[in-house]
Image (tube, rainbow, N blue to C red; front, side):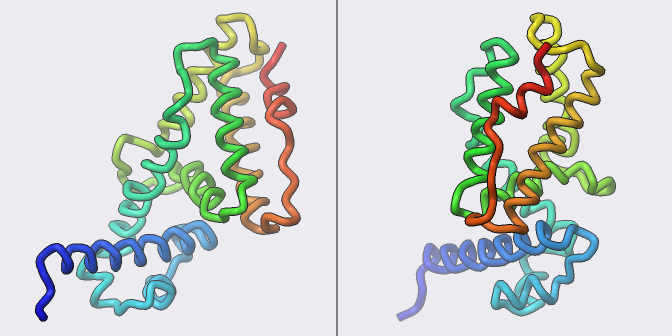
Length: 197
């Protein structure tokens, strides 16, 4: 019996998802520049022809991984956070959400957070919604607001933002490379102390 249009569409979506999941793993583990599409196709159990049928090359595959996996995941992670509350509460809630994902059993949570915090390293690629600088700019805005509200110290906001993002990225990196069982995650309050007066 011939396949229906819906069945073909489902097969297509499953193949694309397999390729994107393989790409996610390799972009996290090796970084964009070191990723070889041979490894992506091997892990996705597909041919080069099929990969190139869906993606023109590594740039397009990276962008699809960011736009189809990473950005929606991050939006979902923070969707319940009330960004109208005081900055110190917003940042604490974001940090708690990120740490919860990083210390979870599912490795992909750490992969996605780590890759999201590395988007800015890809200087020649455009990412939908300008995620290349969005996380930094939003964090910087929250820190400045927290300083105006009198809760955060008067250190240079850019340095505080870099320190906080580097801490989260470092925790995700550590969780990725030492695994769930050996990973010990600090309490969010310990990290927040770098911001308080």
